[in-house]
Length: 124
Image (tube, rainbow, N blue to C red):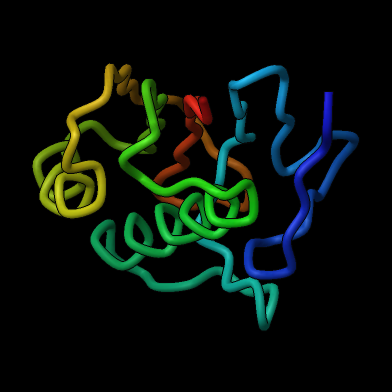
């Protein structure tokens, strides 16, 4: 296994890695809409926050030598399922290969953000 770390995505804020490569798979930890340069939450709308969270995922994919087309599964967490359509409008711009996905509403996300996105990618 190999740990993946990039300064172009927020640093892990707990006892975990941004991502781990195991064989030909990349397992990325959930990304929230933190601006990696400032360390602050980016945006106030679901659209802004979804874009930033997904771009953080993209930075981790790039560090591993991949891109969004290599993602085979996403798990998306929303603070409010009423944001589902708006979230999807941003999501579909990045995940054009339509990977498998789960999307659930949760009671609360870290730092009270509106969304979190994690991915599994095939690097083979």
